[in-house]
Length: 310
Image 1 (cartoon, helix red, strand yellow):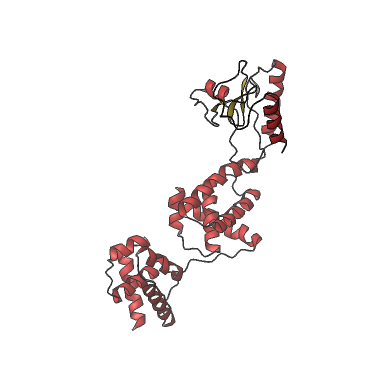
Image 2 (cartoon, helix red, strand yellow):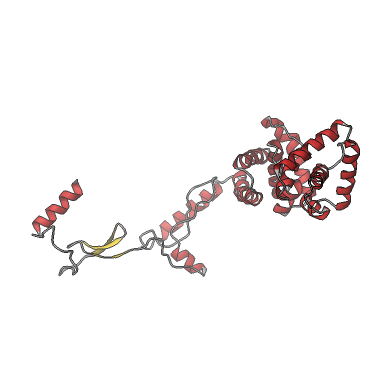
């Protein structure tokens, strides 16, 4: 209401008809300033053009970066939210006095010194964990559990002298096993570019020292949860996948020894036998490649399962 009243008062004082066509020429004494994304004459109200926000000039050299940078990107969830850059001008472009420059330089050093080692650890670990979960298509609740596990690891200072990537991969795989999600350790190691031995060592420390504190139970991977995954990747009907599950359960009841055997081999063998019984052509190499096992292992496990089903 106040804005409309001000406009009507302006039109009345300047004897301008509201129904008159819009003005196309500016007044005799134009004062153009940016207002609300437009360049407007303050005397007559004529809008000249729009001002586009974010059309910044690119910077290539160090001098251009220092002179053109106005804000700092905030992508961290820890530590200070502000940055004190070493610039010689303020936000309005005016030069800062020498004593003020020394003051801000001193404040910047003090602010950086207030950052603890665990915050620096989190700064490095959080983006890596986010990238790893994005690569493996991990659900959000599992990623939150993985970060909770890693935060306890960092607070216990288990990462001192050890690989951060190893503990990130170990925390993620521990969270995957806690929630019984069908992802393999080899996939985590391959996505994080971390040796399997390093992840194994970190995972053992997490299971021994961190999971009991969080009251989380580490569940070893089973062949049943891998059957559905391999079946989906091979584009098999759900009926055949259920038949493979029943086949595995019946073989276990008939005395199939599963201790010491890789669950991937058992799951792949059941899927292969079920597809073969349904006259769906799936070669041994296709099944072995998806399960990341050899064809010899596939044939051996399939033979053992068939012997228990007779």
